[in-house]
Length: 120
Image (cartoon, rainbow, N blue to C red; front, side, top):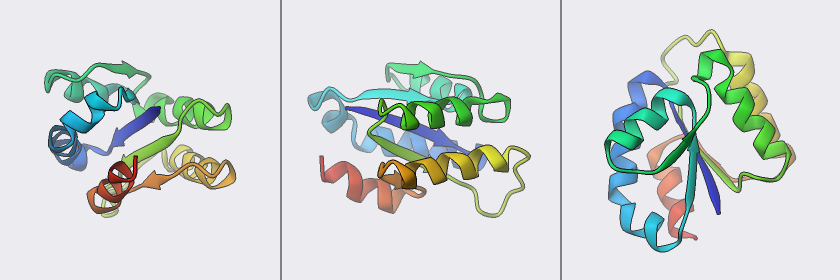
C-alpha cells in the first residue's frame, strides 16, 4: 500500500508526530510512504523511509496528484493549514479533486488520518 504524506509548513510537526504515533503499524503493514520534498525530509529525520518528490510549491502536489490518477497511490494524508495563504492552491485543489474522482481516501487533518490508518 502506498500512502502520500503532505503537510503545509505549520503542520509539518503534526505530521511527523502522527507518523511516530503509528510507526509500528506503518512498518508492520509494509506501507510505502511518498511525499512532497520538505515533508519527506522531516519524516526521514524522524527515521522513516520516504520517496520524495518536489516541494509542494514547485510541483510536488501535482506529482502526487498524477500518482493518484495513475492508480499508484492508495491514500493521501495532507495536513493543510486552513489559515495560511498558499500560492500553489490550484495544485492543492487538483490533488483533492483527483482523490475524489479516483475514490482515493484523503485526510486533511490528524483526526481523519487516524481513522483511515486504523482501518488498514
